Amino acid sequence: MHYAALFFAGMLLCNALPHLAAGLRGEPFPSPFSSPPGKGDSSPLVNFFWGLFNLLAALYILDAHPASFGANPDFFAVLAGAVVLGCWISVHFGKVRAGKGGK
Image (cartoon, rainbow, N blue to C red; front, side, top):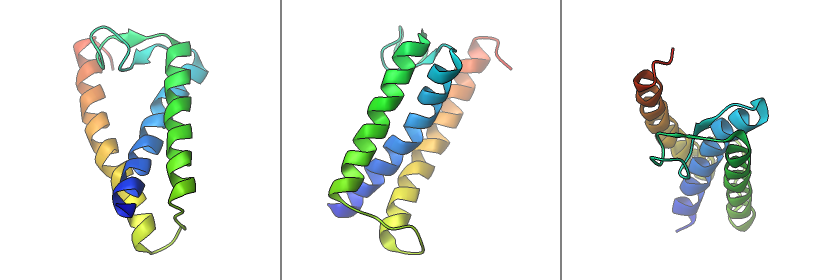
């Protein structure tokens, strides 16, 4: 269970980044609250709060299941979660942007 929680924390940390970045830059970005979810754009404020929620949830998990940086199983569990979600969302949002005529 410990490694699953750390894996999930890595996913949340990775997901926090694009939403916080878009929100702080004042740019719309897809979120689960858009229409259609994950494809339509949400406002910068919605993205900021969604990113903040993801960050706080990840920190809560990491507080309950501490992990140290370095070559150890805990760190690799967090890293694996970030890599898995990062690969998925980069492909997903690449398709979303292409469908909107994005770069």
